[in-house]
Image (cartoon, rainbow, N blue to C red):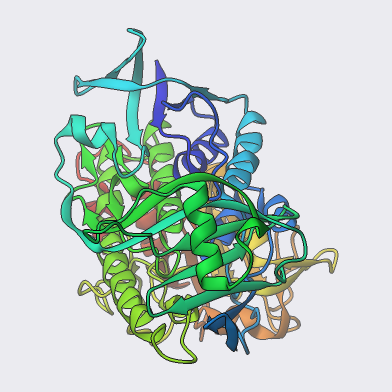
Length: 553
């Protein structure tokens, strides 16, 4: 029996598979498609997803294969009327190393993730269609179309908007389809040199639009999006290569034969739908299987990646016997509100974009969602966001269901900030994100008063935690620097974490702050870790759930 069966090998399923495989868990990933898709589809990872891909060890390959978002050029009547850069004036900061997303064809991102997964000895089982689920309470038996079965401890449906897993569970997919908001999409080839590949070209006319964005890693490939042709009754006409040529010529005023090929043609209708639960027994839903929305803002694939990153460490803790199964309930608790917020943001961005494109200078840049407003910033409302003796936490300070928009300083539940540091022993540069890397909890100790708390945590939890002292050069007393100690360059770490006195910060394996506690309150750290990593602790098998355990004190 495998630990986890993942159904669907898109970015969501592959992210989850990589995260579980690096934890040494038994993973199988199946996909009903007979071969890996070559569709460009989603245009690339967001800044937060780039952080996830960095933790998984693939960001360098992704950055090498992708490109920064290009300038957006708007045309009227075939004539350029405005250029826009939605990231003008933006740059990386000490706390956020990625200030913008990346353009990369989805097939290439999936290829990189499959290569990473293969390094753990796991390959995608293509042509494997799920037709049945039987959850016994102790395991799940999955029936495949070829009459074979797979037994798994848990199953995760990452199989898209038409999810077979969701349908087998009987989970409703409530929402609406906007039949009037229709596009035709595909990958096209243009004659080299016809258009500047450093620009995302957007033609908006009274009778429709065509948008062409260069596909990184290709010489002549472009993403094609357009208003569809319509028949005499006003119904959208199915996309075709010749239809794409007609749309191209009509809006660009360029010869139709400049578009030399079109593939992976599809019709896109705006669907705004989500499930009312992410878990049924031992089966979970993630990505488009749980939520779909407007493409405005480019959040679809990225929300799925975040789903996987949230669920992976929790499955790992439970399957390794280090936390009770109640921890898995926090997946829905944390991700369901994010899905609802994403639907709201993307719907609002779509409305704003449709209004903007009617103006002389308006364009798709209106759809860009600033990183500070992205719905993947944190989980302040979560039962895993705890308050320490310094009063900084989730429930007592912003844990009222807010999704983090009312930011007034770092709190438990928030995304853990990055910061530039140097290794105390060698002087080599090392970012906090590099200290976080890997499937474990990280404890940041600020000030000499944190030393006993860090030592106790390491003694109790071993390699499940990484203890890192963040030293203020010359201000941390005579204690010799250890190999895991870092010097806080410019005080960026202390500032980012809002540290005014000796404190300990517990960073979850998905790089969110779990607890910020005064160093004089070792019990807060002890209780928090015992609830989420109880192996070897006196009450590891206590029937009280993870939520109750985390709330002690």
